[in-house]
Image (cartoon, rainbow, N blue to C red; front, side, top):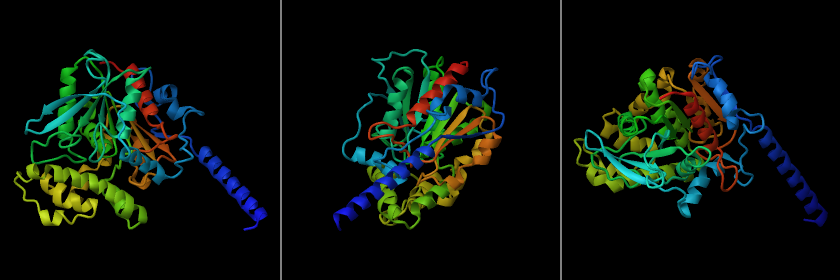
Length: 397
């Protein structure tokens, strides 16, 4: 290529990059969806009023936006960057004290408290309860960054991460693991936390599959929910739609998302296989060894262990969208329109417009549990912390 041609091509490329970046910034405003009249939270202020006044990361004309890092401009880059960081060394930015609690059927749940009690002795401080995503735990990047935000100034909340059966180093002590609708274990954990800290206000936050579980739980509890509020981040809302999205025959699904998610699930199964095989249901080891899709895992393991007919039955009964009309506490959902795991078409927008207790915060970008503003900072911990702080300030014990 001639020198002049090369210069011209470079100028054109730079111009296109600037235009694309400008368009990204222009489309970065958070879109809030809720009922025309939202529920009154404290006798004076509605949920929409509180979000507008005290959650600038969601509502402020300047601050209420998510602009993805120029180095991570697409949904796939945003989604995969957490995995890249963890592959080259998990973050250790948070210290925990672990407490093990045993359910009525003998299952073990790991509660990771932060800050450790020697740094923050037991008191009546407000508590945020975090629930991880598929085969995750308290050491996941997205969890640690949220814990760090919530436990730092100006908030300084107490945080506890619920590590479900068999996850994050918790020993599996029954034949069942967990699933996206297994709210009995979450309810047991919340009740334990409430009984240990009866003078503390509680808010639940869930990520991905954990978001589905928390949403289902608060819908089931209705007006009797012991939580003051709940936050859902990257909720699939419809488990079948999410599974279908991951299994579409695309390059990224075949070579990135399906292998990564299956690896976590299969590692859990292999780690706890001996205990799982002590249950009353026979698992087909040969068929399990050939699993190549998430739905096959749920057909051969999840559905059988938990007594569902098949994966379709599991997805139908445990998808959280159907429980949302019954939510009666302040509820914030944060979702990205470009999430490759949770299709935007299945976000129940109409429910957010009709149930006055709900607010949906939509971003144009962010991927699945990404929201990377640069190579260090994520956006979503800020609106989570702002919302929790606002609700704690506007509710009584």
